[in-house]
Image 1 (tube, rainbow, N blue to C red):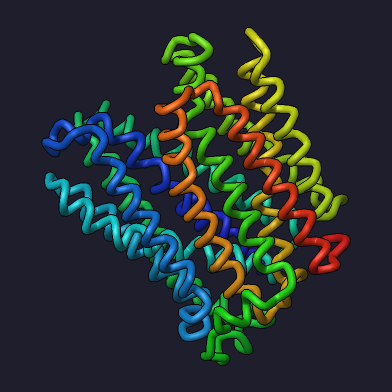
Image 2: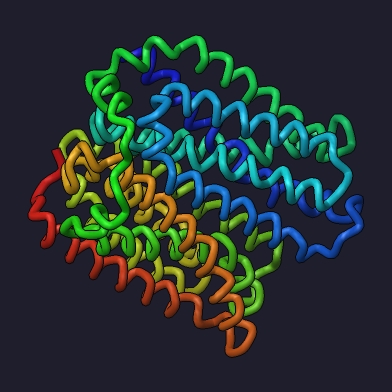
Length: 386
C-alpha cells in the first residue's frame, strides 16, 4: 500500500495542475480567440458542471469499474482535453473540450478522496490536499514557462497535458495494486449504487452537504474577490493586492501540511473547529490596517486548511463505509456548486452596494458553516474522528 500511496500523492498533484490553468492563461488567451475578457466565465461554468455530474455518478462508476480504472481513465481524459485545448484557436471548441476536462477532474477528486478516507489515516488526507496545492501552484508556472519560452499559452497547456498522459500511463500499470486494497473486491463487485433517497435519509446528510457548500463558497469568494476588495475598498495597488492574495493560498497549502501532523494527535472534529476559529480571527485581522491585512489573509487560509480534508476523511465514520463513495461524490458535487454559484452572487452584491461588504459576507458564510458542522456531529453522534 506504500507504493500505491505514492502514486495517489502524484495523482493529487495531477488533480491540482489543471485547476489554475484557465485563470493563469486567460489574459493571454482571449485576445487571440477574439472574444471579450468576460467569456472565461462560460468555460468556468461548463467545467464546474462537468465536475458536478461526474462527482454525482462516481459511486456507480467505481462500483462498476473499480477505483484504479476510473482514476487512470479520468486522468487520461483530462490530459486529452488539455492537449486538444492546446491545439485549439477557437473559443467554442474550448467550451466543448471543457466538458471532458470537467468530467475527468470530478471523477478523480471524488474517487481518490473516498479511497484515502477508507484506507489511510487522516494525516494523509491533509497532506494529499497539500499536494493538490503544489499542483495548483505548478499550473501557472507552466503557463509562464510557455509564454516565456514559446510565446504562447498553448505550450503551457501542452506541457501539463503531456505530464498528465504520463501519469495516466503509470496509473494504468499500477492497476494490480488497487485491487489489493482490503475492500476493493467487495465494493467493485457490488454493482448497484446507493440511491439518492437513501443518502438524503442518513442522519447528518443534509448538514454535511451544506457544510461543503458554505466552506467552498467562502474559500472561492476570497480567492475571486479578495484582490478587488483590497484595491477598491482598502486602496491597495493591484500588484500588491495580487501578492497579498497569494499569501492566502500559501496559508491553505502550508496549513494542510501542518494539519497532517496535527491529525496524528487530534481528531477531525477538533481540527475543523480549530480551523473555523482561525478563519474568524483571520477575517477580523484583515480589517486592521497596514501589515495586519496580509497577515489576516494568511491566517484565513491557514484556518480553512484542515476543514475540507477533515470533513472528507470523517465521511466513512459518519455515514458508514458502504455509503462513503456515494456520499463523498455528493459532497464534491455540492462543494463545486457552492464554489461556482456563491462568488458571482457576491459579485452582484458588491456591484450593487459595495465590495466593502466582503468581510461581512465571509463572516455570514462562516457562521452557517459552523452551524451545519455542529448539527452534523450532533446527528451522527461522532465525537472523534478515527
